[in-house]
Length: 124
Image (cartoon, rainbow, N blue to C red; front, side, top):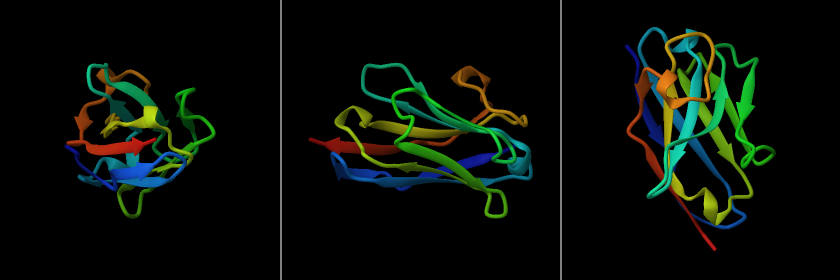
């Protein structure tokens, strides 16, 4: 079992930066792939970034590649999403999720554990 709590969301102007954190509890975090997803009003939840259990493999949605960076600190049981050059279209509720397996996936249905989400709003 893994419990996830996101933090770091907020209101930022276009071009600004935010760093999201996802603190995990449970013994399986260090062996679990992790993902960040987002959901805007009226839209489906979409994959943003994923990282495998060791941090040695990452993947990004095309819309955020080059602007967002996912990382993890297994000693702190925390995964991060550094978001730079934010755009109004990045506005959404951001969720972290754990697969319970060593790799990440891009499909939300492959994740077993979810946080409650944190709101990110980018003003133009």
